[in-house]
Image 1 (cartoon, rainbow, N blue to C red):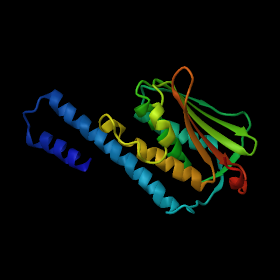
Image 2 (image 1 turned 90 degrees about the vertical axis):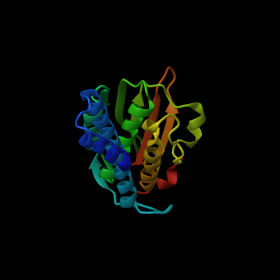
Image 3 (image 1 turned 180 degrees about the vertical axis):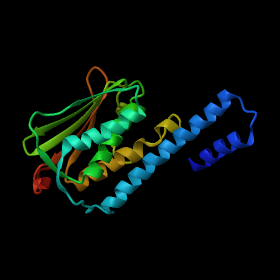
Image 4 (image 1 turned 135 degrees about the vertical axis):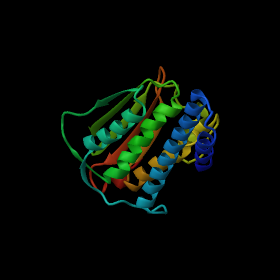
Length: 215
């Protein structure tokens, strides 16, 4: 993306006679490339925060999950104001052991995934609920859904671009989600919704010893 950013800005600076339309197109390209680069850096920083290897772990403290969700949703609304986002929270307040920055990154990735890869997405619902000894975070969208051929390897980092640059961050984002959730001894799942759209669920244990119960 840096090559594209430099090329576009150079074209604007070196060609004062560019039309307003051409100038706007180039600057829009710069914005898109910069936004993609930001997402990549944020995800790489998340991985660095965890560490490497299968035994990577995080330092968890009891956190208000509602605040983590609101942080991710607020950022998403600023970036995708055209998409309607509804947040559904339980009446009962409860704390979830987590690294809040990392889980907010997971929620941010899932929201951006719904917007970019849902393609036709106009509405997203983010919810939180307590299910026994687990906290469940859910992101549902009304987009085109997940191609059946990709359901089996959503989180292994191979979901690279198939149709242009707009899809190239899918593999990185979902792979980071899986790594972060696994480091929390949690579970993540992606599936299609009957009637259209996709649903991603993240389950985090409410007690430190719940890793033995993972499915």
